[in-house]
Amino acid sequence: MNWDDTTDTPAAERLVGSVADREDQAVEAALRPKDLGEFIGQEKVREQLDLVLRAARARGATADHVLLSGAPGLGKTTLSMIIAAEMGAPIRITSGPAIQHAGDLAAILSSLQEGEVLFLDEIHRMSRPAEEMLYMAMEDFRVDVIVGKGPGATAIPLELPPFTLVGATTRAGLLPPPLRDRFGFTAHMEFYGPAELERVVHRSAGLLDVEIDTEGAAEIAGRSRGTPRIANRLLRRVRDYAQVKADGLITKEIAAAALAVYEVDARGLDRLDRAVLQALLKLFGGGPVGLSTLAVAVGEERETVEEVAEPFLVREGLLARTPRGRIATPAAWAHLGLTPPRSPAPGNGQGDLFGA
Image (cartoon, rainbow, N blue to C red):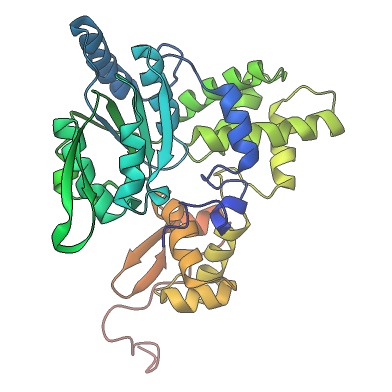
């Protein structure tokens, strides 16, 4: 199970989780940029997408189908709305898990207007029958509706107006090749750098009417795990702290103090991340240790450790997965301020036993 796909999972409960909860969704609607010029980051994707959309407008045609892949919180939904705005078209939003039958998809497709943008989030989780129907809809703008059952069933072709499908996925590898090949433009969303996140924080602070200085924005950006959604969430929590504990101005010191209250450290690790590292270092000497054993030591489910905590720890170079189990890197020891154990003597490990 992908713990980042739904909002009723441990990932959704974390301040540094990349899943959008209801509060995030409400705030994001107000903070979303309205055009490509206002969108921060993803320079290559923006440049390429701008060419695709400009060319389509010049031809007076609908834009090619677009596939956006990348981790949650990087702006895939925002880009889909920008595509619709740039094309001057309405947008219909749905998700893969909501389409369980081919009839569900047929109902949506048959109600589209010409040029409309259909945004299909988590497209890799769509049912196989609906997926196969989508092939024909994307390529020929036609679907076959089956009427009746058994030997008497009849396929009635239904012509569709030209439309643009924008698919979003956090797991592009799960998409079958026939579906990937039908997208005219494919883009991968990268994690943001600190400078880009600072710009995101400054922009959001202005829209939220929050006073913040340069160092305060840098402090929040540095703990945001390369994800704008997390940066905006941390900004709101720091804003609350600044209003209650200070004069409302977010400085570096205020941001650090606020995030210490919420247990988000200087590298963006939270309680769960540090618990995994501490167990690995203090109980198992840095590993290797099996995932199940590590999960028991932390008091969490195996899937929680593997899907929620590990990806960021691996990306930060604090933990490594090996055939023998999980091991801590020197950076993990340094981050927690611990000294790694002395390496065993080379050879068969019996040197100390015999005094050699």
